[in-house]
Image (cartoon, rainbow, N blue to C red; front, side, top):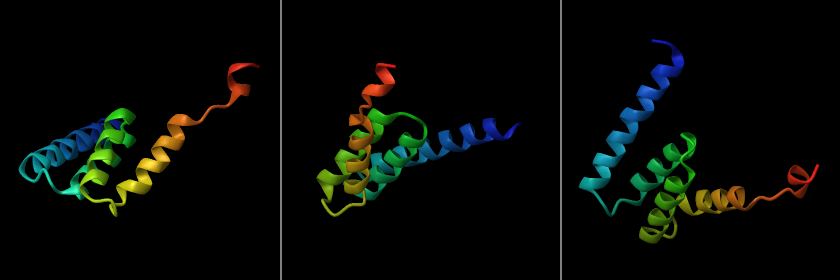
Length: 85
């Protein structure tokens, strides 16, 4: 198995673990934050933002608050030069 395939398997296993832990502990903001970080790395930005929002709703002091701000900044970035060469 090559490194890329192994990374995909590792990400899938971690995602399944976090999702299972969230089901068992739905009020743990850190689990939502960790899963959001994983979703972001996988390019699943809307799911990451949803998890960050949930973590912040559970705990306003969560590190997800900073991650949510950054994620929104990234999503709101607009460079007119990229669209009008």
